[in-house]
Amino acid sequence: MGLASTPLFPASASPSFVRTPFHRCLHFSTFISTPQSKLIASDCEASVFVQRKCNINFTKWHTRNTMFKVSCSAVEVEDDINDEACELVSGAELSIGEGPDCIQAYLFKAVKNNNGTGVLLLSDIFGFEDSSTRDFAYRVACNGYNILVPDLFRGDPWSKDRPKAMFEQWMASQDAQRIAKDIATSTKWLVDEFMAAGISKKLGIIGFCFGGGRVIEVLARDQGSCFGTGISFYGTRIDQSLASNVKVPVLLISGDNDPLCPVSILKDIEKRIGRGSRVVIFEGRGHGFAHRPLSPEEDVDAEQAFTKMRNWLHDGLAVNN
Image (cartoon, rainbow, N blue to C red; front, top):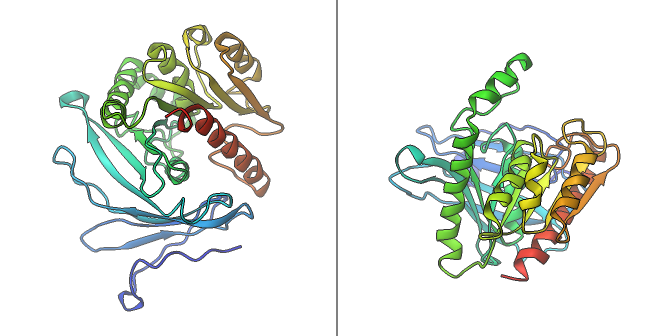
């Protein structure tokens, strides 16, 4: 079922469009401010699960003398969110931290139905600008949250056009201590914006693939100080021994056909953490299905995974905050 984009300009403006179909439960158009003022729209075939529209208005913010893109999106969300509850989400690119610790990040904020809860979203190896990651962040924000997506790779994410033989070399160039420090900088920003102001009692953390593996590391260091819960989607390169230091419940989602995230490791982590943690395994699904579904069948499981994540955040954060 095709869905029409929310008009950004009157018909007389005659902007140019580029359409790119993909299997997503989202539908959006993005306006990027350039000297030529070109409009780039991405359209998709929406799934039957998506029925209501959430308008995302992106405005130009200034943070530490940083200019950033202006975007405007219309995103389809779950049919159990009413039109009043999901009307507006604002978003901006930020520059956070000082000096060499300064990093780029995207912030997506629910406007009308904001529950005051901050959530840190750690991307996969394709980085914070990847469309699949941004799509997912939009949807979470539409459910009332404030989502910060930091640039974990300092402008050098992995790209599909690189030779696979170079992956480990690229991975080794991403200093683990620097990434941990950047995550700490992002966490501090969320604390200052939401916890210190008394808006949110605890933060949430979500991660995909590489970011999913870092969720366990972050929560182990945090010891329940800032984060109230976590969700790890098919986390990779996880240090299982750290799980015993995690003091909050974690939802672990993956497929049983994912060699990068063995089910046995997830079950071991669930047991080590305890505290009501839970492993959810989708039969026949491989790596990345929840935020990069490649077929209508994967769309179904991606929707179910999103619903489980949304309910987990609601029960662990929104209710308590």
